[in-house]
Image 1: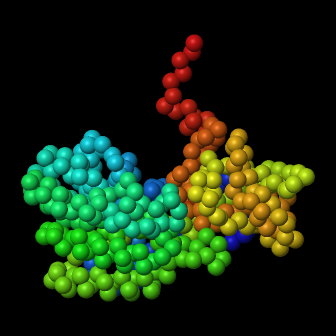
Image 2: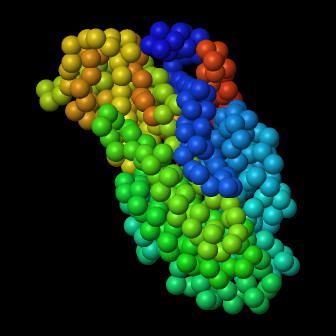
Image 3: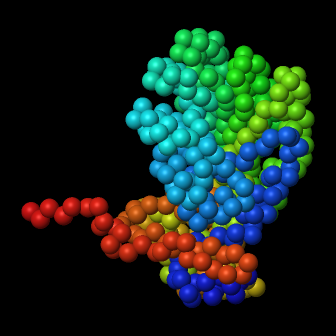
Length: 399
Ligand code: PLP
């Protein structure tokens, strides 16, 4: 694979995002096979990596889609998803965006009572899914922990009677309930605890068809890192879900919305080294990228494993790997790597989820190209940006 990466860089230039379709399909199958329930829908979380070709590939595997903006819905439909297979799970958006999503025919999820009331008044007999906040602390850090009592997400589990009154008043058909407590969940039992609370809250909804448990499955970012054992989890969770179905005498659909689990490992970010700078304190490796391309280390203190694919067997040395953005822009501090020289290629692993999709043009730099590898063939799925991309949409008023 090292040589393949080098060939790809020769062909497409650096920096470059590369995704392996075979890994995505392996992860999808692992997820699908982990659950033993009658009806299972896997809605890929579009926000993790929203390139049209990636969406199209997941659609071809049988995945459905989870979208948090109407633009993601538009991308999903363009990539071939049926509106009926799309869950729309936004947070705190305005009425106009809901109107657009409803017009596109997707499944609607509401995460506040004010919007439930608006939707009920405006759309007679609307089928609606409700995002419930179970007041559980899950998620790997404060930015991605979203199911606790102080979180802005969802309708409090204590507000179900009020929700029920609104539903009765406006004839809303609550056909789904949704919960998502965060990303990178370290304790898999959070799902079971959430399930107990949500299934109890769902008891009152007579028209219930599905329960959507969101996501948060942890992937390993470094050797020996904790990860969700999906097989074990699926077995345990299926039992809880099947008991609920049996008790209610109905085969509900179980839904999940994995993002990271499906695409994180499939992605690599390839960069080349501009400068190796020795100071009196440390050695900096400056790469031809920055947090404009990969923000997770700066934003979440996330760890990405780095490989020096130009010199994998070199003597180990200690480096600070930094970017070119004009403020502190650190990918890794005190990282041991095989000796790095100017021009070497560094590969960031786990660059499939929340990497390209969180990139920007900060410092007026171009976003990189994206390439998809499938069965040994490479496909350019997004061109590197150019100055035309940077200025398109701008009006130059000459003063
Ligand atoms: N569903 C919703 C509503 C989300 O907000 C997210 C991301 O936080 C996901 C699914 C995907 O989560 P993950 O990438 O951890 O699988």
